[in-house]
Length: 608
Image 1 (cartoon, rainbow, N blue to C red):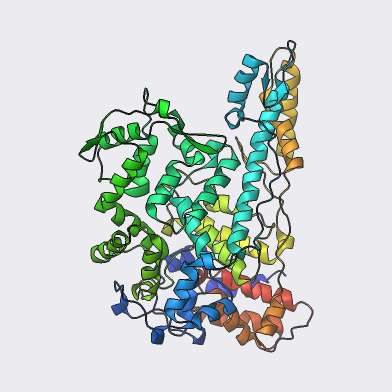
Image 2 (image 1 turned 30 degrees about the horizontal axis):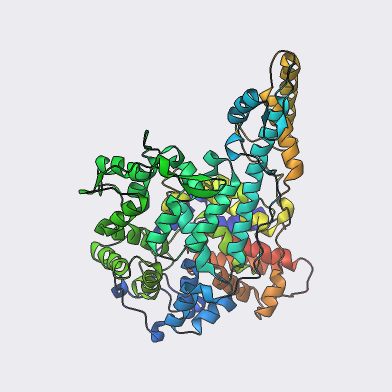
């Protein structure tokens, strides 16, 4: 349904223009006058900084919704009501001790199978495969001609096929993971996995081998709420991390400092809690830790067994010792406690609260479940400073939308990967080793418009534009566009001109590899399947006002401003030509989707 410009303008005039929306999102705070759907939401100011547990008497539907929003990705009213019917301790325990919940019905990732047996990952790029082909006469399972023009072209084409296919398969896995976030009965498991993916930010842009990223994702999920020591060891030995931070080249003759630096600066201690000497010596301790065929290998012949001095202590240390010494420093508990708090609660953190949270970690040998339990039960977590004040990241916004719609899979159209890429949070492609900046950086005029468009295309899939090809190098072009055809023509002419004198033609190989990849790795293009009219019928929604209240209560964590609520009532009652809803009327589904899109375009929808 096309919303008429006249009616849509009434909503925009009440504060949804991009600049005004940004200002409002960044200034919205708890304490807005609540409607019945939001009763007993934000706690009193006296709860700020208080780690004492919330009582059963203080528990409510709104606070259960807040817990599920932060410790997961939100949920349907039925899911929130289930938590609200428990005590706070029972609700938190169900989320934190998720291993007791069976998730066996979640589908595994169905790989396309683009890599034949025996293909070496380090040869996937042309820069690696071509020299190998020249040296041995074979690479990537392709034998080259002994002589003649374009003798290496088949190797180059297969190399580009692997690069394009890997990019498409990585997008398929990201879609699978996001669908797991939507469908999982153990939401904290996936929320923590997403946190650790950002924390140990590893990008397939450098790895160019999706299987390493898949293995890392599985490891992060396995250790999501385990102990910090076990997780640090697992990441130090993770094949993707070994390649990403170059520990495979860290040998006693030539120590590489990359991993040693990042485990101190970004993973466990923070700037100012180590010296450059500590990094150099720690790098020697991690020598020999490498990987082979997606498996960790400790090559003793490459390890430096000499004495090292780290944090003022001297000994024949190895990687395990370095991790233990890091965790013995008080700064480690403060560092990870602060990062977890800011992820789950809010940005502002007093020194007293910070130290109290760090002590919870120390007292429990860096086990995360006691820490998360303390945090999620605390009055501070439900206080006015924390409640519904967090700007949702693109991934969290999309996944929470689908969960609240009652879906069990991310729609194939509009393109989830393209949305995340344009919003700056493409899974498995963080911008750098520091991860995504988050917070207010998610909101600007372009991202707000992009969010509204993505949600609109989810609700009205017939408006979705043709998909953009994923980028391996260079610029994106629309499928079948004149720009792409012109570029292909230029590549073809270049190939004909040089085919008699060169070993291979890279543009022609890239085009051939991409065509084959697009035929081989096919993404899901199915739209979302849901029916708002049936949803509102089940919720006993009979009037336009009921519809506004129901949808706002289901999809928002803070109440709409009175002006926006009046604009929405004006819209729905005008569309209905009255106030009564006929759930079987022609066009009612489109009308309700238009109403929901306006709610999702409100600044309140950006907060969780």
